[in-house]
Each structure stands twice: as structure tokens, then as C-alpha cells.
Image (cartoon, rainbow, N blue to C red; front, side, top):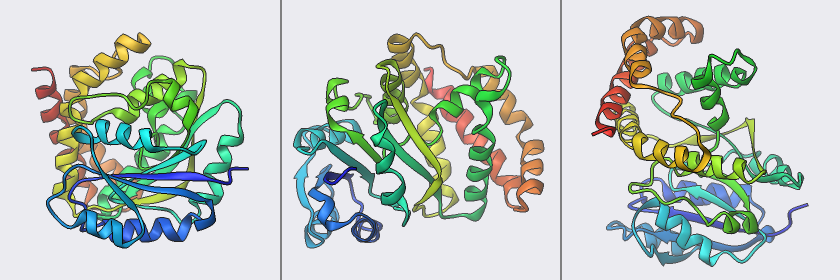
Length: 293
């Protein structure tokens, strides 16, 4: 049974969501189980650091820039055998502590996390939930559905509600380094797997990703897709895995998105998905095309 953990959060201008995020962590994770509460701040220009200090967190500056450096700066300060990472816009599920840390009692498990879905708009949340439910069974499908199998492998493997065995992460060289901070979770998932360990995801533990609305989600899709070339280059080098999604795949999914959007809207009974899904595919396509430049 895990009795003591260090908690780490990397921040940058997170004053809007941070009070809610930190208070919820305090409600979910028992105080007696916490060794350290560490905030690594990436030189915020708002009052992020003051908020963190007022809620009992120790604040230090990012030794570099971005999520990669912030995560590794935090890792240097971790002293417990286990540590937990959160992001500044993640509202932790109330059942997280009782469900996720016990998963690391498995000797083969090095990392464990739950799912998280956007709080708004409703169409994004229902779209994410539909995709997650669909991909959970992809590993049982035919080999020719390789891209979906790869998506199923990384499903839920994020850094925002995640507990780790400290020795394993340090032995792997810490958190992966990327230029922008995109894809760190995906690359880490492959490294964990290559080392013979498991990253276990409990799909029933669902935290909330605090979003402002559709515009923010579309920007995130564009930003994430724009970094895919770098992320998959690293994975190909380390794991000898070719990218699961080709340019043709992305274009095809955009072209068919009006039809799949209607289908998903009917399945989820959420009409807004009829236009949200094509928009998501468009911004993803735009970022993907720019990633290869």
C-alpha cells in the first residue's frame, strides 16, 4: 500500500484555474500521505505563484522552458518512492486516490492514471467520451487497423493525473525532452513499454479538463498536430515504430468528418458534434500539414 507521495504541478499563468485545481487535490489526496507539494513555475506573469504559496505549495522556477523542463525540474526535487503529477487545468476526480495509486502495487506497473475529459463545450466532452469508448476495444480488432491500435495504446496516458514509481522514471532518464512540450506523455508511454513496464489506465476514473470553450480546444488540436513530426521521429528512433497516421489518413478523416460528425451526433444525442467534429478535423489537418515543414 502506498503511504507517502510527492505532488508536483508545473504552471504558467494558471491563476484562472489553479485555485480550484489545488483545492481539489487537497480534498482528494489525504494530507497525511503527502511528503512534498511542489510547484514548478515557468515564469508566470500573473499571480500564479502567490496563489500556490497561499495554498501551502512550495514554489520553484523552471530551470528551462516549457513542460519538458518543468517536469524534469520537479523530478529533481522528488524524494519519495512515488510521485504524482498534475497540470494546472485538471480538476481531479473524487475517487482518484482510492482507485489509481493501488494500481502500482502491481510489480510490472510503473505508471498509472485515469481519464480526463473537457468540461466545455458539451459537444467536445461527448466527442471525447465517444472516441475513448471506441478506442478501448481497438486492440482486439484486426491488424490492419494499426493506427487505431496505436491510439488505443496511448489512450489515457497523460501527465495530468498520474502517479509514478520514482526509481523507474529516473532510470528512464526522466521525462522526454521535446522542443514545445507536446507529446511528452506519448513518448514516455513508449519508453515505459520498451523497458518492460506497464502504464495502467483506469478508464472509469474520470477527471475534468477545465477549458474555456471550443476555441481553446481547436487551438490545442492545431498545436498538438503541429508537433507530430518531431514526436513520431523520436518514437521511431527509440521504439522502431512507424507513425500510425499518414498524411493520406489525416486528409481522408477530414473529408469524411461531416458524415462521421452526423453519425456521432446521432449516437451521442449531441447535435453540436455535427459541426464540432469537422472543425476539430480541420484544425488537426492544418497543424499536421505544417508539422512536416
